[in-house]
Image (cartoon, rainbow, N blue to C red; front, side, top):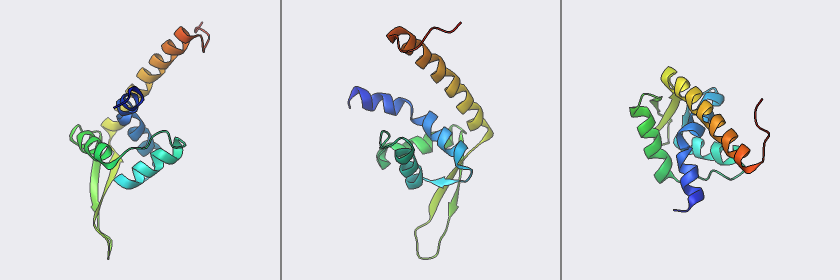
Length: 115
């Protein structure tokens, strides 16, 4: 795994929670993968082997809830949505990310120091 892959993996929870918060509807795993790739212009290209265990872990942690959707002629799909705990976790993750990215940008001279 490359350093960039490790960084992507480290942001999985945050980007999935944000995507589901913005979606306005429950989404199945493949749709989450597709939307993450599209909205990041291809930067986030998660494989099923990474996203499904992450979704399962987030569900076990109470950040997501799921329901099974049955469609005639198709396999049942598990739809994921954010819980209230997931919304709070997203706020926390976004605050941490903002602090982290601000500090890194400041160190690299990419952003002026806050007043």
